[in-house]
Amino acid sequence: MKITLSKRLGLTAMLALAAVMYTASGTVYAETSKLVIESGDSAQSRQNAAMDKEQWDDTRSLRQKVNKRAEKEWDKADVAFDAEDKCQQSSNVNAYWEPNTLRCLDRRTGRAITP
Image 1 (cartoon, rainbow, N blue to C red):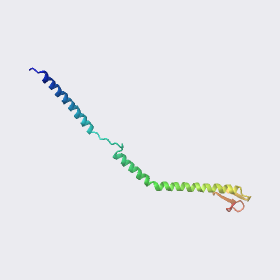
Image 2 (image 1 turned 180 degrees about the horizontal axis):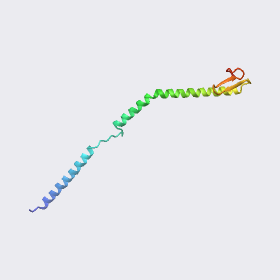
Image 3 (image 1 turned 180 degrees about the vertical axis):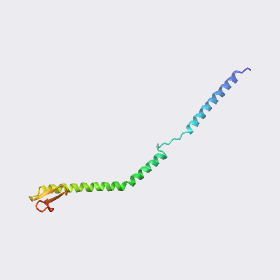
Image 4 (image 1 turned 45 degrees about the vertical axis):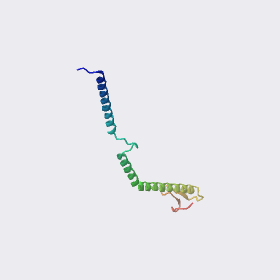
């Protein structure tokens, strides 16, 4: 069987074309099998974010109560500090500061006094 030059070039061209088409179809298949999410989030991350927000909202009232309580305790300590200072600087010699009750008391009667 004798193959001429033109037939050989034709066969070579067909094989090259077949190889290119095979490679191209493989590349297209590989590209279409991928799912690209440009924003970087997924349904799972959105669900986690929604659950975190719900948890945050649910604990909001508790956080507010804790903050109010802490503020109330701080205010109480601040007022007691000022009252202790006034009691110790009082001109009344019978006045003394009671640290357990946070009051200024009279030594003779034990009653609270206002310095």
